[in-house]
Length: 441
Image (cartoon, rainbow, N blue to C red; front, side, top):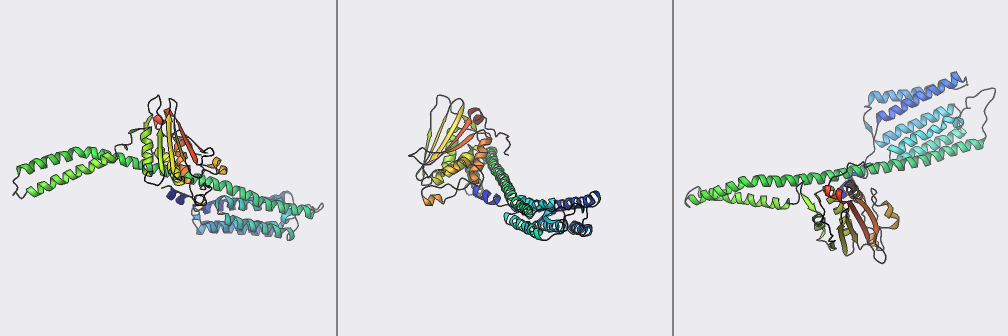
């Protein structure tokens, strides 16, 4: 289940609504008109009004066309969204050509489309837009009309200053866009991983509910089936063997008995699975260990006998999945043995799962539990290439922490080797068995 969730959530398609792009373009049109009006009328500088208005008008015409012929609420494919952002860059370059090139302080607006792309579009398209912006900025260094300024006191900027402006634009596009992309990508990964966590928990709870319904159905159907069985048996005894009804009554009795046997199996399977059943700590451990006993790895369970009574909690799907997933990782990476140790006192309950595998790389110890962290190297090359500790551990850790547990990852002390996962609950939280309504952000 974890692998499916990881593949479903790890590489989501990225779409942006046409309406979002159009709103940004209309904002740009209004800002450009305001700038032209202020420079031409307010400051009374000599600006090429006609060409600038032509470019702005063409941009507005494009916006109107998109709104008329396309549904603004539709989500654009990344390539189409990138094309619209590229159009913004070209329009800005055209305006800057008539208003001083890089001498114009608004030349830093080249950063805006690339920054928007870095937050919503694939990285390759962001690189293309960044290169386009830098190329346009480079051409404006050599080809542009004079900056609108007071004719009595013309502004002359030295070439070294213009080079600094160009370099700052190029660096800002590269660094800021890379930073924005990294932050947005981490946010998307965390959001997708949390969605996968909720999906897994919902599935586990749904299975538990079905298990409880099966047990309830078996209990409710048991009485009428017993009545049918008894009546059919009594009728079978009173009907002569040569009666045409004897065979039918025998069939009814056999089928009723068969139904009773089936319901008996369901009851046995669901005996510890009803939603409100209580299970001791030892039962919880046995239920998570049982599916992994058929592998070549030996699983040793040690439960310390304490002076206090054994903690008993409700059957919580979050705890079962979390502990089971961590145990599954231990079995995957262990060479020969996995140890599950448990103990408790009046204040806390603790489960420690350790293996004799390669352990966790030191540079990854502090990052264990982050979504999509899937490398666990060791001295053995074959084991180094194995993947694990990725989305599954993130889901397990998130679910366990929502039940009040504290989960820590360490390595065994030399000369021993292997990973150690310690899961600790306050005893009151474990016995309450309730999932804390904590924010996962």
